[in-house]
Image (cartoon, rainbow, N blue to C red; front, side, top):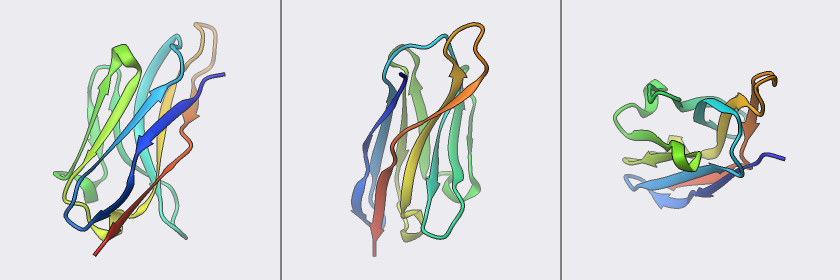
Length: 121
C-alpha cells in the first residue's frame, strides 16, 4: 500500500512561516505531479500549489509570491514553504501525488492524511 506521509504544519502568528513536507512511503513506477491542496471549514478543497515531474510549478493567485513548492525526486518528497502567512491561509493542508503504481496501472491520485495550519492574528 502506498501512503503519503505529511509533516509540518501547526500554529503560527500572522506574518510567520511554516514548512510542510510530504513523502511517498515507497517508490512507484512514475509520478506525474505532486501538490498541495487545502480545505477550510465550509469551503471546497482547493489546489494551492503543484509541481510536475520536470519542475514546472503553478500556484493559486492568493499565495503567489508567498508560498514556494519544491520537490526532491530522489526522495519522492514534496515541500511547501509558506511565508507571510495570513489568517485566510488557515486550513487543513493535504498532499497529493498523481502517478502510476506499475506500467500497466491507470493514473491515480494518492492523498496525505492532512495537516492543520492555523494562522493567528
